[in-house]
Amino acid sequence: MKIPVFVIVRDRLTCLQQTLGWLEVSQAVSDIVLLDNASTYPPMLEFLRRTKHRVVSFPDNQGPSCVWTSGILDEFEHEYFAVTDPDLVPREDCPHDLVEHCVKGLEDHPTFRACGPGLEIGDLPDHYAARREVIRLEAGHWSKALDPEWYVAPIDSTFAVYRYAQHMVSWHETRQRLVVEAVNSDQPPIMQLTYEQPTPGIYSPEWTRAPIRIQFKNDSPLTFAKQLRQFGDWIAARTGPMLRAGYPYVIRHLTWYIDSGSLPEEELYYLEHAREDYAGWTRLAKRP
Image (cartoon, rainbow, N blue to C red; front, side, top):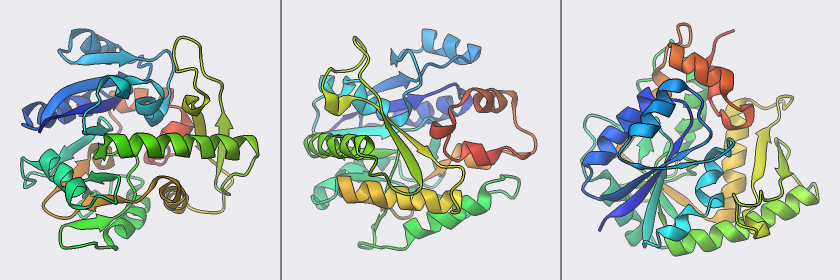
C-alpha cells in the first residue's frame, strides 16, 4: 500500500530537504505534496519553482490547518494519508518501513485516528534554548504505554498517518465545535480562538472549513509546555485519541538541535517572518 504525504512548508529549506530525503526513498509513499504557507525566503522560492514534487501555494500563512482547509485532501481519497512538518527525520536506527509501521498501527488499533513515530528527546543539546521545556512536555508523551509498540499521546503536525474517512468526519465535527466555541467565546483558558470567514476562491464556502486561528496567550501563568499539554488534551477530547510509536520507530525534530545562541541565517529569517501563533517552539528558541 502506498499513501500520499502532505508536507507543510514555510521558509525553512535546509530541514525540508532532509525531510524529503527520507520520504523520497520510502516504498510506502505514492505522492509528496508541498503545502506552501506563503514562503518569502528567496532560496525556498527558488526550490519550490524547481522541485519535482507538486506545490500548492497559499496567499497567506494558514499554519498547519492548511492540510484540511485547502480542500487538497478531496483529491486523494486514499484509505490513509500522512501529514508532516518540514523538519522531521528518522533516527539512524529507525527501520525503513516507518510509514508502513504507522499504517499497521491504525489497522491494529481501529479506535485510534492517527499513528506517528515517537519523538527523540534523549539527546537534545544544551545549546537549544527550549530544551527543558521540550523535555518537560514530551516526556509525558512516553508515559502511557498502550502495548509494547505504541504510546497513547497527542500529535499536532509532526509526522503522522491518518485514516481518511474517520479523520474527515472527526475533523468536520471538530471544526463545528471550534467555530461554536469561538463565536460564543467559550474558549479554553490558555488560548484565543478567532473565527475567520472563508476567503472566496481560496477556501471551500462551507463554514466548517473556515480557518480558525489559535494563539497561545502570552500572559498565561502556565509555561509554554503546560499550555501545549493542555491544548493537546483539549483537541484530543474533540477529535479522538492518537498513538506514537516506541523505539526504534523514532524521529528527530531537527529544529530542536539548532544552537540558539548562534542561529543560522535561514533560521533568523524564519523567526523574523513567522507568525507567533504558528511558530510553536520557535518563539522560545531564540535567546534574548
